[in-house]
Length: 541
Ligand code: AMP
Image: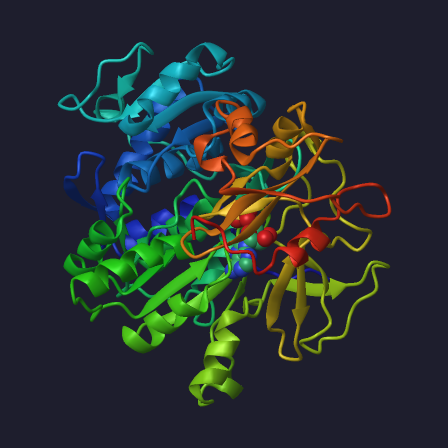
């Protein structure tokens, strides 16, 4: 027997429709690339989003077509999201921190038809324009007054949408229609596309709005420093309209002074970013003897929280820290470190110890840890194994089938993280089985570094691992086994990488060892190397 309830497809346009009707005057405040602060609200963003839809339809874009953005967090970027997603196009957020060639590769792989981007990225787009095989239209987030000269035949966003019809139907498709595309390089090989559906995004939004997750309401003022191009700004571009919270968009400026200014002038109550951003802010606060009287909660994720950041916020600045773990593949929130009830009144060391762990999954996310044989390990807070995840907002595969079948027979997804889980479901990451390095919240390919290092004639074997760095969380350390009778120098090795990898990927140090350890299958044993170098102090630290 079926229930007798309405069919109300879970499509993301409903979130902005709700905001327009229920919280029309709640604001979205943006620091533009020029530095100018501009204010708009959900009613106006809704109207503009409809105009974006009209403009896209006039460009011939419809259901399933990919619309790419290279954009900072801004109200216009939000309008492009809803304008594209509302008509069933797929909003593809491209990460501008990737190498230009990777951006071109991703845009071609996604078969993007149009690219909407911030002025900042004009040099990148112009440099790769001849490599872009499918993008026919370029739109720049600008008005007539600040539209830059360009060789792309690009149009200014404000002019592009101006005067367009707002009479466009949204959400005329099933809830499992593709909605967003985000490539991740947190796996080996080429970046892979995670393809969110309307349903998965709406369910993720409902889950993350709850009190033990991000816990926001219409009276909150939310500053997402985490970029919209990195796993949907942890869902905030969807959950803020869902709740009616004000949004404060930092644009391109994420230094301590700029973030502080927005936190202070806009009386921000909730903010979210990777640890590196908070180090800059904390340094700025201390240098200038400032406090954070309005801020209630800071959500920190993407990398583990260092204890000094946790204690600074909690003790020195009296702001509640919520540690978050997730992945592009998990939409992204997987666990949140809100204190469980039995620890609310515990002493400070116990509470801080709990908050250093990655947290507990909200309803909708299932976690387990397994040993090498795939057997579930006890939930004892000690037994560490591969972390698997399952749920309605977890990827079931990658775009175009890349990477093959990623789920086991019971639909569990292997995160590539190594963790333990305790009796109350608190998950703690202890290592990583995937071979990647995460620096300041962005991935560095260890394999690319190794391959280029191996091309050096005096190198027999090379391994790049991430080691602790106080500012960037991890930085690459390159470990070299020299070829028989050769003794290359650190400078030789680093010089051979120059121009082949992004500057910020350059290893902070090179260490020479007699023999790089190999595992049973002949692969480099990274776990052993990470263990060996776990207390290694980088010269840059
Ligand atoms: P991404 O898909 O780029 O968001 O990266 C996801 C990966 O980042 C996870 O699988 C972890 O390896 C790492 N990560 C994310 N959040 C945390 C955290 N709070 N603590 C430790 N590692 C994290």
